Structure formats: C-alpha cells, structure tokens
Length: 193
Image 1: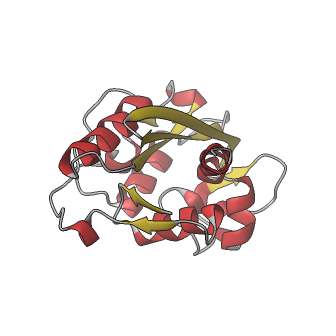
Image 2: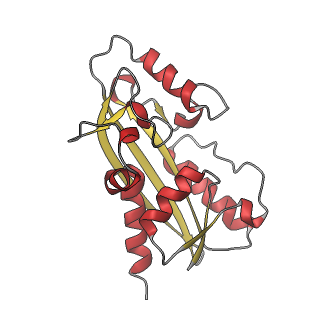
Image 3: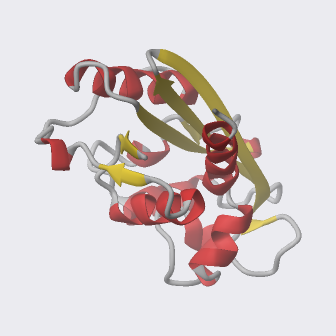
C-alpha cells in the first residue's frame, strides 16, 4: 500500500519505514513535487500533526496520508521545548543549537526528567485518526552517541543506560515515542479489511 508521509527528513523516513515494514511504501511530498515548507504553526503537537496531514490531503486532492509531530517535554521547564522542539534555538531546525540551548537552560537543575511525545495524524478515506507514543527518560548534561538525530544524544530512556544516539536503529525503534506511535498506526492499518 502506498501512503504519503509528510516528511522529507531521511532519518525519520527510515525509522517509520522500518516500523511499518514492507507492506507499505512511504511516498514523500518531494516525490510528489510538493517542495514548499508544510505549515506547522499550531500551539500543540496534536495541532501541528493535524495541520500537516490536512495540508497534504488538500494538496494531493484527497490522497491517504499521515503526518507526525514530536516534542521533547522537560518537566523542570514546564514542558518546554515541547511543540517548539525543532525550532527551540530559532527557525533553522538546527539540532546542535537546540541541544546546546536546552543544556544551558538546564544548568544547575537536578530534576532531569523528560519525555518524548509523538502524535501521528492519519487521514484515510477522508477521515482523521490520531495515534500517540510517549517514552519517558532523563536528560544528560553532555551529549553521548552519534546515531539518531535531534535531542537523541542527551536523552536516556527509562530502564536503559544508553542514550537514543548510542542505540542501534532497531533498539531505538522498539522503544521510542515515534516507534510506539507508528506501531499503533500500523496496527490500525493492518486491522482494516
């Protein structure tokens, strides 16, 4: 089954494809000639995911599609960076600067609890369905590891000793927020007649 996924991020595409498996071929907006930035200016993670999927649905004349949005929610910072995670240090989606700013904002704070939260908005046959995945953990004071992307080098999931950036793709996908949301999406898609 072909389904449009609202991302041109190769890391994210690879993660989601691995969880969905061979029964699905993910098509990117770029492959369809949609090169403009997909809007995501809602105040919530759910709102952004929904906005992106509806935008694609309209652009493609009603094709089945899905979009996700993810935020890192830090307890001691009142849930920040949250919906602004990708643009925390400014508009450029600069993972290094985002991580540096977060570590600066966390200096001297002993409560390092945080969680990653992903929401997927699927529009299938014109109807929207939402799926959520959450993984809790703690933030380190210095980055470790080279895999993954975003805040992965400073996030250690509950029950593990390594950061997401130190894990293999398979190990991360098995427990990650995105992996959990995509597993719910896959279960829903596979349960349809």
